[in-house]
Amino acid sequence: MKPGIDRAVGRTWVLAVAMALALMANITYVQGFEAQDLRDDSLNARRLADRFKIDRGPITADGERLAWSEKTGDDRYQRRYKDGAVFAPVTGYFSVFSQTGLEEAANHFLDGTDDRLATSNFIDKLVGDHVPGGTVEATVDVRAQRVAYNALASSGARRAAAVVLDAETGAVLVMASTPSYDPNEVSTLSGEKAERAFRRLNAEKLKPLLDKATREVFPPGSTFKTIVAASALKAGASASSNVRAGRSYRPPGGGQPISNDAGDIGGSCDLSRIPLIEAYAQSCNTTFAYMGAERPGNAAVHEEAGGFGFGDRIEYADGLLSAPSSFPTTDQPVLSALGSIGQGSTVASPLQMAMVAAGVLNDGEVMQPHLVDKLRAPSGATVDSVSPKRMSRALTPGQARQMRDLMEAVVERGTGKSLKGTSILGGKTGTADVEGAAHNDRWFIGFGPRDDPKYAVAVMTEAPGYGIESGPIAAKIIDALGD
Image (cartoon, rainbow, N blue to C red; front, side, top):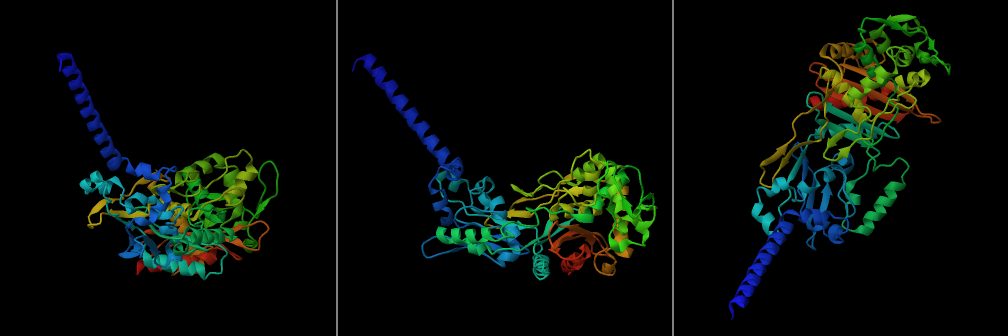
């Protein structure tokens, strides 16, 4: 060849080698590090078809498997759930169409595609071999969860929920909901069967697929007075401060007067002024309606509610968000008065009200709730663990101590006195009227056990009657945690 042709051929050869190397590098990168993004892409037609070809890791709690995979005869894996209806708010489901609960929050860790697993299986990741799925350890106490679910299911309530938090760490120990569903029904390998199950469940009036503990909100009734009382303490009042009471209260600007419960007639709520601790223990509507409407007023109550988490969607596992609880911002005293006794447009999830009780118990610090304790590799080694994280400070330690005194007075001599001698040390009852319905939203929030209070509990049952009727359920759950 001529020198010029030799140089051209040489350059072409070098360019071809460089392009081949670049192509190999790109293929390696795509297979090793972008494969998950491609699998998750909604345009990938194989995304759903391949779901059951992976042996997902288990979801466990207290050493028990709550969810796991079993290999079938056609080399696919069927997801199984133990006591499915009991733990459904925790595990969620893994269906041919979607996933929820911890199946969603830890999806890539369970299916082995999480980068935290890849670091210990780099060669498998590099060559495209599947990395085994890891184990997700939940924070729930399995015995207390079962006790909570059975108590709710046997209460006769239309809808009911219970949440228990470790006040110091924010760990979710109980997250129970009724009516519930069995994840085994919707996690079938058959898309047709799954579709039928979803259609039937979605047609049910009380929406069993919707977790009542975190994903639905209800008027909290007088349990919201905990936040109003806290706002009064922050404004300079003390537990012994005399506050306005009386048989009825008409907010500025008119509207219907707000009255105390008929059972309070002749009691301390009828007096014109009483100590704050007595108004809280006896749940005087007129006291807390006045506080929300006039002093400390709507802005102070709204700010205090925000300090406990109202207004935000609370994240309790990766991507798992609660429905937001809310208290109205308004310049109309009548609306603020009604909202301050937990009626009107004030709504809250059981998770949120458990956070209120937990913040009071934890010296005013509100911890971020978390449902995952540890993530483990298939070898058993801990890959990641969730550390307690402070979300906000709602009260000073001194204010929180006074708030605990108020809650203990409820059990000692107030609306919760039937719980005296149980494992519940302090709490607050709440009864929210449901317009046009024969049932009420019956609430109890509190803390225990009595000799070493460290758990905060919220129970809501929807049935005729009063909030105190949810109190024995709270006591049963705290008893189960203490055993």
